[in-house]
Length: 342
Image 1 (cartoon, rainbow, N blue to C red):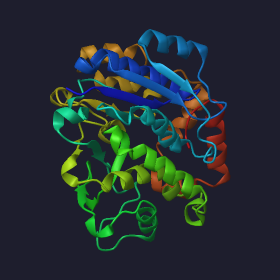
Image 2 (cartoon, rainbow, N blue to C red):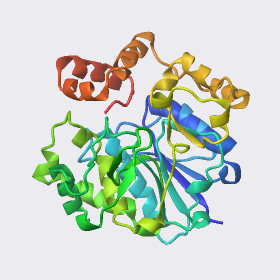
Image 3 (cartoon, rainbow, N blue to C red):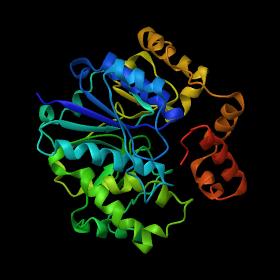
Image 4 (cartoon, helix red, strand yellow):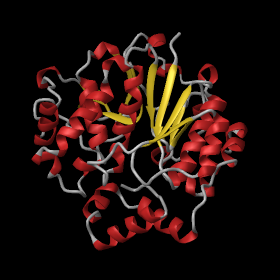
């Protein structure tokens, strides 16, 4: 049976709380994978975590790395995923492990068997995006957008060999595009090495560097580039995970007892800043008591209110507001206290 290696991004601020919850959940609910290697990496200068967090990492046997990697795209924190994952991946290129990148604002409640690539006889396991409403996606394989044409050209993807998938929550047919909230890959494929090479190239490419800072096309570059790197590989070697992985709590907002039996991994985004979110888990006493140890995350009342307001603005409206004075002020306030909002 193969082994899992987990890697996620952490920086000072809210990601510290999230990272500790993620690591603790692997140790408690990971089953046969609970003792897997876990890496927490900070790839931007001046974002090192606190000494207190480092002490908790030691207790959890988590390897923490602080290294200035994301220099060119410093103002794009979501690209940390590519810089951090690529840095760790290079040490496992000749290994048979299943290399798992996972977002910090997620946690496990069950043994993640489908991430074990050797066990499932595949090379990649990943989830389709939730919905096309808030994403950059092509719905027609015969009418690829200019944006994706540039992406595919950069990655040398043969457009004639593209294939379609269904989005997880609204069941729409789109050209294969995946969520980076969780992905398991064979290191020998060098998925993240390729993404790193391309993101560095993109910085000097007038098309990509010229994308408006408030645009979704720029915001989702990490997910878009990872998808382009994945879709080049044979379809029969890719396991599409269902909604039991990367289960979107803001979208579903409820988990019944039946669903608790199947969910493996939950993506909660900013919902754990609020105590009321715990009510969602009351039907499962064990998970509820576990989460009570960590949730709600510490946050000033004013900041909590601002974050609450922002989190309830539909993403398409948020996109139009992104460069306004109001949104710049909100982001400045949140970033000042370490809330990663992009």
